[in-house]
Image (cartoon, rainbow, N blue to C red):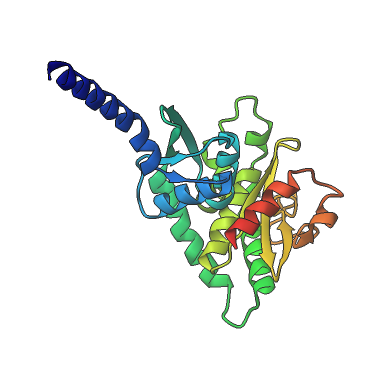
Length: 257
């Protein structure tokens, strides 16, 4: 009986260890691709949850998760990842200047309401927001040419474009996404490592169109004057001047539905 009792104790200890290691994996949501992971994070952030988001997966590139979240969440942020035993990963999003970026989002709503009318179709709304952003923002050449660029600073975020009225491409792209969100249109932020540049994409009636507000803003700034060469370009049209991971963003838009 003593041996039997010891065996039960050992089995119990093993079971406890196994439960400790395996429970987090079974309790965590399973994601199939980086787009699903990014969507989980976006949902949590928009609900005001700044704690950890835990998921289980075997082969998802965390850099792709960051890129996907950057595309759909228009705030400047850092992503911290911790891989844990049992095949789970905990992600924490650290938003830069959250209060100020919230102010930018509120300003985006006000600006959008001032230039968009109910009788406009989606293309007209996108053009009105494109023009409004370019007219009230100038390209920040000092930041662009600086050797000490800080990617989390205001010129790289929507608050730079909307509150300070000067930004580099990241600020334009995130600000435009906020403006589109204000009128119920999903515009994702597209980045290109090859070009060190960013712009936006929308999908209308099953077709993906690209909008590069930065390239449509004259340098030096010309006030009310706005270019339109890079407004609503198809992928094939934009590929004549831009380089990006086109398939990644097409799959992202597919997952957004």
